[in-house]
Length: 269
Image 1 (spheres, rainbow, N blue to C red):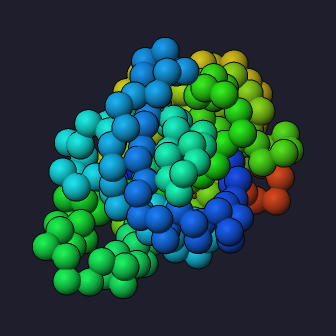
Image 2: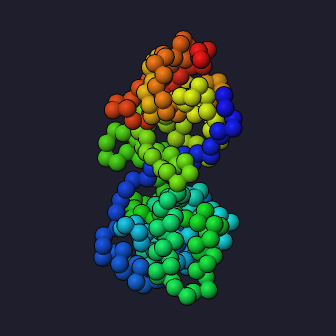
Image 3: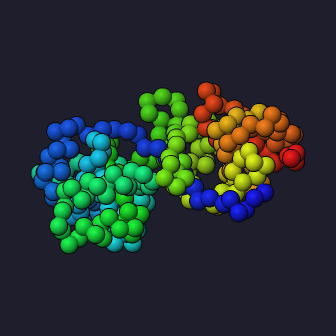
């Protein structure tokens, strides 16, 4: 195991991609009066509205916490993942998704374009505020979503987003108790180490369900669970070896990432 190659990896549910209409987004940006109200702990009652700058990038709506992740509204938005926004004379339900990576450079540029010369611009494009960037998506439902944070995008597939540095990829989770239990831990930031030059692994904050099928196979992009670590592993290279008993990984369709049940067994170098 090469601990000198430890990387910080963010894992979160890939939210349902509802889209703003061009007219809605234009009105919100031009009005410049967006107030955000994440739900309270009951998941239904909107919290105290907070006025905040808003910008649009590629048809998506973004806001940031002026005080970084210490902003109370940001903490509530991250925790509840949903709430209301009021802008351009209308109140709408919204889903809130923290974002990271290269998109922040685009958001910076949108702030520079919209608020040139403002005394508040520098803090809003600084590291602290960048770390508290939220994408707001329209939501037709009432209250926060009670299902797992995995999004299904109208199919039986559930997705999550994995961010390493400035690069983000999406993975498809298996339809299993282990995958659903893993999704209940999201969002996570994991310190992943390299092992056997074929996979990255990290220890989860708690053990998850061991219900599900085992196999001896894996593919590049497979995500697997190793109890009783409890560890999660992401395979990035195929070395031709099968996972020996009792540890097993199941390959998902099309070679996309999947979370599968696996028992810990001795693995050969």
